Amino acid sequence: MDPNFQAQLSPLQQQQLMQEMEKMQMKDSLTMYTRLVDRCFHSCVSSFRSKSLDKSEIACAENCSARFLKMTQRVGLRFAEHQAMQQKRATEAAGGAAATGGK
Image (cartoon, rainbow, N blue to C red):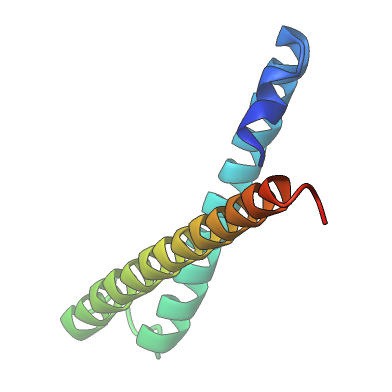
């Protein structure tokens, strides 16, 4: 998002934008949590012999969730790097076009 975009909005529009962004972040967090639970539960729990998980199931779920969170964090970092690179290229292109007079 263009940094100047938010400055052009009225205070009410800025507040509405922030609320929408918070909703999107909450939805993304819940989606990630649901995927983590689904993946790790199905990978680690194979039977329902008792009310609680056994030691191997607990260890598997802990390892699975740690790997899932690391992977999610890495993907987020790579995405941020990619976005920053694209923004830098766009800025350089706009600066080059301005320097040549838009030709």
